[in-house]
Structure formats: structure tokens, C-alpha cells
Length: 96
Image (cartoon, rainbow, N blue to C red):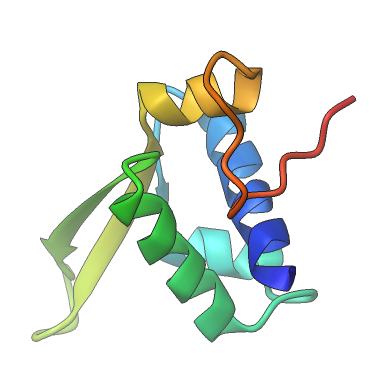
């Protein structure tokens, strides 16, 4: 159940900045008080695998052998949030 909540929160966050994206560190820093970092990572991968979110990875500007990951809501993710496609049982979307 907690994973479904994190996924919904991530989609909601990405919708607030749509059409722009957000880096992974920012997403984690917003959600860290209530969710473990590894749960946020797993949820981001799940949303990417389900094609709701796009992930871009670029070399870190200062740290060699590290990457900066950016996440952006895809149109399919917007449709899910707006109720234009069938609900996904793996994602809890807060309505209202």
C-alpha cells in the first residue's frame, strides 16, 4: 500500500511542474520526511517502466562516475492523473 501512495505523490509532484521535469535529488528531498529513499527510487523505476514517466540520465558535472537523473511526466501519466485512462491499481491517486 505504501508504494502506491509514493507513486501517486511522485506523479502529482511531476504534474505540478509539467511540462518541465525534476531531478531525482529534488524529488527525494521533497518526500524524504515520510518515505524511505529506496522506496522513492523503486517507485520512480516502476513509473518509468509503466511508461508514465520519462527518465533522462546525464553525467554529473562534478562527480565522475555519477549521474544526474531527471524525471518528467509523460502524456500517459497526465491522462492517468486526469482520469482519461483506466486507473492503475499500483498507483494511488488523490482526488479532490
